[in-house]
Amino acid sequence: MTYSAEVGEKTNAALCLEELAAIAASDDRLVQAARLWGAAEALLKRIEVTALPYAPDRSLYQEQVAAARARLDQEMWADAWEEGRAMTTERAVAYALSEEKTLPT
Image (cartoon, rainbow, N blue to C red):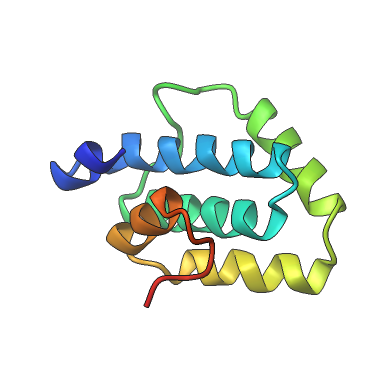
């Protein structure tokens, strides 16, 4: 993921963020998952990608997000999602790879 972000392959970086979010959700790190999914969504929007070439069927993604969202307080989910959407690509990558799961400054 770091390499993808460094060389400007932002589509792949977004996919990596989504996959790390799914892992976080499966480990009950739901706030982290929401932030990462929010960051991935914002990155894809910034680069104007509407469909991922690596994952054209988004049903699994949608199911994962819905399942995680259902397990977290809706206000906490919305706040975490927006925190992720506000991250730069560099910040999102640093957050995703950090052992510390608070937001980097």
